[in-house]
Amino acid sequence: MQSIIQVENLSKVYKTGFQALKSVSLDIRKGEIFALLGPNGAGKTTLISIICGIVNPTSGRVTADGHDILRDYRQARAKIGLVPQELTTDAFESVWNTVTFSRGLFGKAANPAFIEKILKDLSLWDKKDSRIMRLSGGMKRRVMIAKALAHEPSILFLDEPTAGVDVTLRRDMWNLVRELRANGATIILTTHYIEEAEEMADRVGVINKGELILVEEKATLMKKLGKKRLTLELAEKLDRVPDALAPFNLAIGEGGTTLTYSYDTNAERTGITRLLQGLSEAGIRFRDLDTEQSSLEDIFVSLVSG
Amino acid sequence: MNYHAVWSIYRFEMARAFRTVMQSIISPVISTSLYFVVFGAAIGTRIESVEGVSYGSFIVPGLIMLSLLTQSIANASIGIYFPKFVGTIYELLSAPVSYLEIVISYVGAAATKSILLGLLILLTASFFVSLRIEHPFWMLLFLVLTALTFSLFGFIIGIWADGFEKLQIVPLLIITPLTFLGGSFYSIKMLPPFWQTVALFNPVVYLISGFRWSFYGISDVHVGVSVGMTFVFLAICLAVVAWIFKTGYKLKN
Ligand SMILES: Nc1ncnc2c1ncn2[C@@H]1O[C@H](COP(=O)(O)OP(=O)(O)O)[C@@H](O)[C@H]1O
Ligand SMILES: [Mg+2]
Image 1 (tube, rainbow over the protein chains, first blue to last red):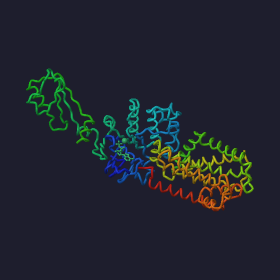
Image 2: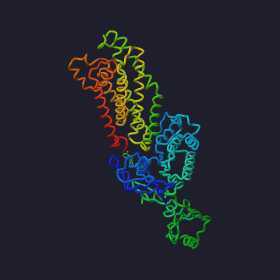
Image 3: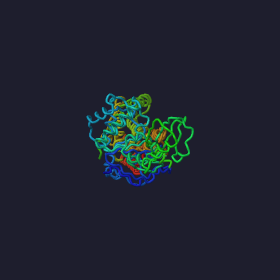
Image 4: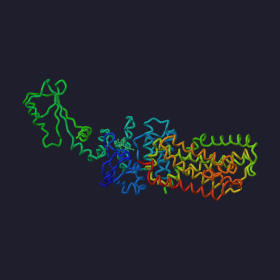
């Protein structure tokens, strides 16, 4: 797979002396949706800001579509669109003007038809002459997305795109992201909502305290670290787990009506057969059973704390 | 050169001025008119002419310089400070524009605005007093060079400032006093010898003197010195701007 962004040993020490990135190396593949996952303060925004030219790197090297972001900043930046984390827009400008401005700023000739399409795609068309300060927060966020797309970037950064965003916008945004990807764009988003990464991403990178802990295909990650839980609904109430079943580390649910067994989907043996055997030998009958895949959230918690 | 970007920023900045017509155009015109009413008409009639020029006419170049300096600084400093303040600077920093292009567009727009304003004040003045411009070419040259220099200076202040007080402190504490003491309303030849020498340390004296010469052919210092000093200020501002961009001072972490 061709990579479109290459980050090599990137470090950042802020003037305060705080090291926000510790020798991060990362390849983003052309055409993928990459989720950068990490708690607040992990360094996600710092990483994006360096790639986009807003923050100076302390050491290391970044290329975007083969162009060094410092030496060939013009070519690199022309390819990139950024929707920053904070809602920052010109209050007094109209939607149409601010989006047109962005296109010009990135060196592209005016193209009213294209701006019209973006505004329509983002349900901003009827607001095109409104001053930005009159718009709701969600609408402002749409304006920022429109600005980022105005110069037809092939790489789009979305920094915490759905933080504080309503359901409609969230859904619209995901549709848009999928459409952009279908047209060949590469999308990098940061989030601390795991569901977001889980729902959208092809690959996931986990960053914590300035270190990139892991980069993995989402599916592989889920499989590799995925735990499953088997919950049995008991026919009769149970006070304590019989000693014979102790090796299975079963957990009794509230009220003693369920038993939960956790197992690793990748282990050679899941132990389910033996468990069921043990249950029947102990005379425990069950009415129903249910299995549950652990979420990225669980994976993340185990990675960060581990 | 990213011409689209330069043009976009320039147009954005010009639009900002027209949005705030009251603040950027009408108020300087009104205050200039008041100067004429007070100094020109009321007091000026009691002051004999200065070197053969009636007092009302004499103060016109100084008044234009006063507005040119303060408005150039105000326009350019707010132009770059505001995006920093509200955060929209992110877009400028992430755009494929060079620092030179940023300076050309912001400073160019600020200078354009103050040149237009200078001409507007000149027009206003012509309704109150009789004017003559002996050296129109030099008049325009001084107008353009001063507008550029002080717009650059304003740009520097806008980048340096991290609060609205800082934004206002330099114009208020340095520029306005220097302009008032720089011979806007009098010829420094009217001062006692000691203060004449002191005045020569005031850079604004050279600007006003040169500008007034282009109108009436009278000056406090030789016009060549005025032109030279203007270029020196321009060079200093350019050097500071170059340094800011080389180091990313206050723009990038
Ligand atoms: N301009 C700055 N100066 C000093 N420290 C900063 C600056 N910006 C961010 N940091 C620090 O760097 C760390 C990473 O911040 P950030 O990249 O914004 O994290 P994230 O986006 O993952 O929440 C945080 O601890 C933050 O306090
Ligand atoms: Mg962040």
